[in-house]
Image (cartoon, rainbow, N blue to C red; front, top):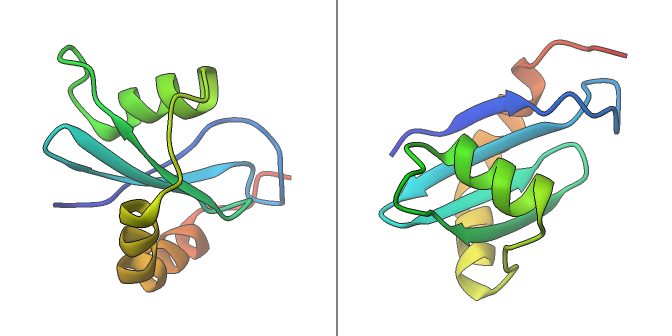
Length: 92
C-alpha cells in the first residue's frame, strides 16, 4: 500500500500538521508526524481513502487506538514517515 501525506491546516510546528497514513483493508494506520502521535482507525464503508478515515477518526473525533499493531506499523514505516514529513513545505 502507498502512504498518503497531507497537511491538516492546523499549526503545530513549522510544517503545520503533517499526517502520514496508509489504508490496509478496513484498517488505516497513521502518524501525526508533526507531533509524533500514531495509531489505527477503522474505515467506514463510505470512506474511500486514508485521509477521509483519519480526518474523521483522529482530527474530528478521536476514534482511534494506539495499540501494538499501530506500534508495529510505526516501527516498520518510521523512515518513510520521516521522509514524507521532510518533503512537506514549511507553512509557518
